[in-house]
Picture (cartoon, rainbow, N blue to C red):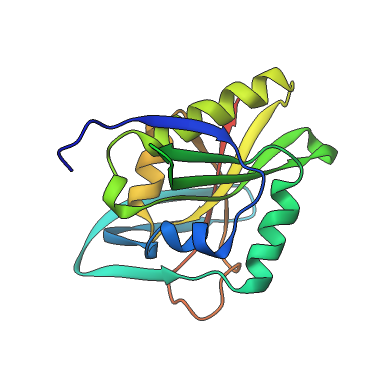
Length: 186
């Protein structure tokens, strides 16, 4: 992309099927995976992450059904979700919901069109979410990704998120895929 990049972030009001499709192919590709090891006895438990290069990249495609878009729009109605625009084109979304029981903002979905990766759109969405969460006096921002999505883990860590928890049995059907929970303390 040789043209000047213009990033504009605004609160999403609704996500249409057309806008969702404007994000292009959604999902991720990773040339590595974090193997998560757990060991311990009745007195001590430990977890460790070991980065392992893959001979064949891990690829995960995602598509949203009409029901998924309906669910996203219910979350968007809360007023915490953001869109990233280049000129007038939606190129990224951050869909977030308030969790009142623990005073947190939960990022349910973050996606940037692949043509706009590494141009600052994802970081701009995170910065805007952090600013919004601080204004609304949330205590933290939370999200979940997978140990197979190394690019996401590295991105979130570069934005100030820390690994805060694991779940080994969240996913069904994806061997070796474990949930990695991350938080940003406000």
